[in-house]
Image 1 (spheres, rainbow, N blue to C red):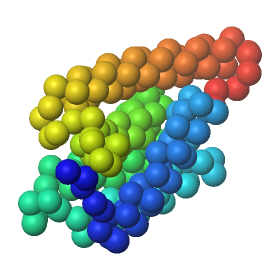
Image 2: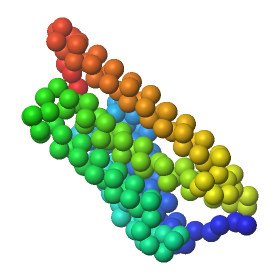
Image 3: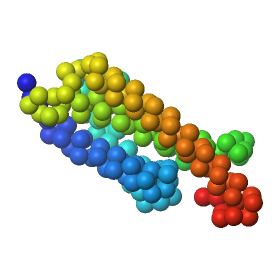
Image 4: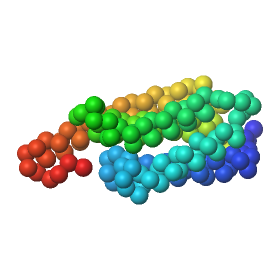
Length: 172
């Protein structure tokens, strides 16, 4: 049976595509979601609106795990803005800032993956529930992708710092 979206669900879905596109663009262009860049600002604004519009949705009629992930994503993203100002974190600041935005993106896509696989294609969705093997495997692949991506970001930040110390191009 095809599952339909309410008007609120359709608006939420459309709005939720904004941080997804901005996040992927930021990763492709800067290798991080950079809040100082336009794509980073669009990501943060889109994430905020996406999370707030999700509160009008619930298949259970109340607060859901997806809502909790949205709140955690907001805390991670906006916490990453605070990290550079916390001098006691020392050399960890760029790593923690990158982690915060990347982790928020990771969290944002967990419900998106489950919803997409259980709703598309509309007449015969790929998965019958969020607990289906396909959804679980896809989420496991997403966890592995997140870990590999963050390891790459750490390597990139370290390389930039080394180049800056050696007199190369300035660290970003």
